[in-house]
Amino acid sequence: MSVPIPSPAANSSTTATTTTSKISTVAEKPKPANYKGFVAGVFSGIAKLTVGHPFDTIKVRLQTTDSTRFSGPLQCVTQTVRNEGIRGLYKGATPPLVGWMFMDSIMMGSLTVYRRLLAEHVFEPRPPAVLHAAIADHPPSSRHPQQQPAPSPTAHLPSYGHGLAGILAGSTVSFIAAPVEHVKARLQIQYSATKHDRLYSGPIDCIRKIHAHHGVRGIYTGLSATLLFRGFFFFWWGSYDVLSRQLRERTNLSTPAVNFWAGGLSAQIFWITSYPCDVVKQRIMTDPLGGGLGDGTSRFGKGWGTWRRAAAAVYADAGWRGYWRGFVPCFLRAFPANAMALLTFEGIMRTLP
Image (cartoon, rainbow, N blue to C red; front, top):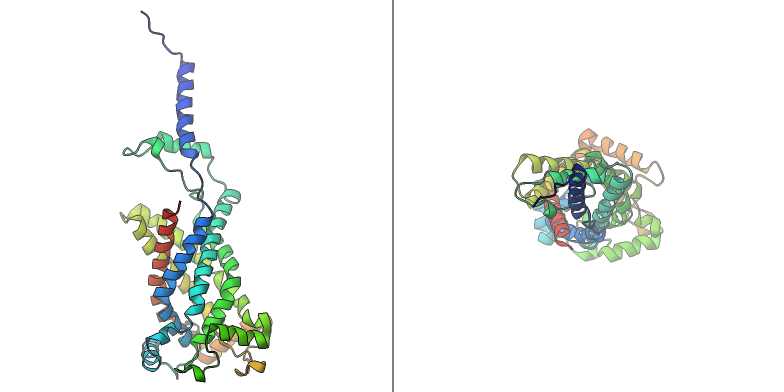
């Protein structure tokens, strides 16, 4: 009995069918749902506040006072705990507890969406068929090609693309962050241990009084400075991608460990580049609003020149060193707070269906 020999055309057809099957098996994986970034961001905000708020209180107090009140971060911590107890380190924590949950949800969720939009519409990916065929033809020896996970839709996004997504996300969340950080800062610079001697008894009272005398515009004091400050998110998310890639390629660290180290180190890079801008922002947000509020006379005024006048005042008060006052507690806070936040965020992203 003769056995029919398939023609070369038949072989080619069979091979093409097999490859197409492999490609379709890999390519038909659903894209990650957009909601995941917003949900994971809530837990990221909780982790960040729990670890980082005491550092933030010391940072704000050093940024908004001169050296005659506190000689440095250690003395600031000592006096705060002695005069106000441990709770003094968590003054103003209520606005960011609620606010950072919402802020990180918006920031991380929008960051995820902006990354995808940039990857799909700005940075041209490799043709999907070529990308998936390469995976199907060269699978790792320990895994069957049909079991390969689909590549991330943003896998081809360059590091500066992640940085651009960071700027967009930072601008988006600034409209929530500005009033939250404004109220937090005003509560943090109240040094009296008793509520009776404070101008504001809490965040709601602070919002109510500012709105009564200065309206919504008063609550949004520092919005322009916040938008400028959060433009430096380019360095945070760009460096996070660079560090994540390097740690995955050059070390044997687990995925959570990569998220932890890349998250902490990229946050420190962000603060090194943005800190002077943050000092000016805090000066604007703690400047007396004046008027019927009775908190003093505004030093920097209103309008487009506010940021310039605040920056000049910092230099007039302490020279170039003034732009770095309070940097040590901020830098120390940046690593643990953001390492835990990114570890939490990425872990939740992997867990959600």
